[in-house]
Length: 158
Image 1 (cartoon, rainbow, N blue to C red):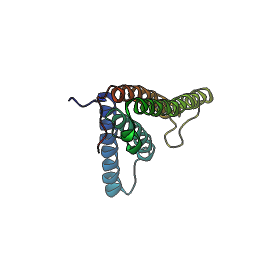
Image 2 (image 1 turned 45 degrees about the horizontal axis):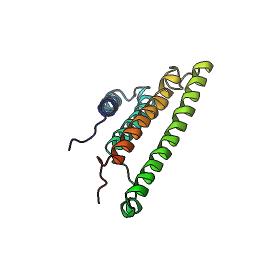
Image 3 (image 1 turned 120 degrees about the horizontal axis):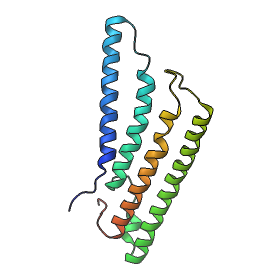
Image 4 (image 1 turned 90 degrees about the horizontal axis):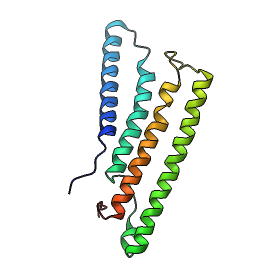
């Protein structure tokens, strides 16, 4: 059986970890040679870690890789098990929907206020916009995972 995939999120996570590695290495070399460091590395690294976290969580969600206690689920007959899987999916969508909604509101407020980042003076919303975007993408992956589980395409590890 082909394993479900989340190519876009894998690409984002790969780029994020690659860029973090490169700017951190460059910062170490510059600091060693000049006793000074780049001002932007911490700000970009924190931003990219958030992207990496949400992209990685989305990949794990699509691949059914998040930790879940399946004891009750495995013990239930088919109909109640399907209801439990649906309940789990709805709960996940509610949480991700709240993150998307409030992340979007926060991003919009930052656009209106014109807030700038403390380190580089870039618009703060550039960093915040990824929160609602990636959580909305996770909502799609939650729906895909729930449908796959309901159809019996995804099995938990025993």
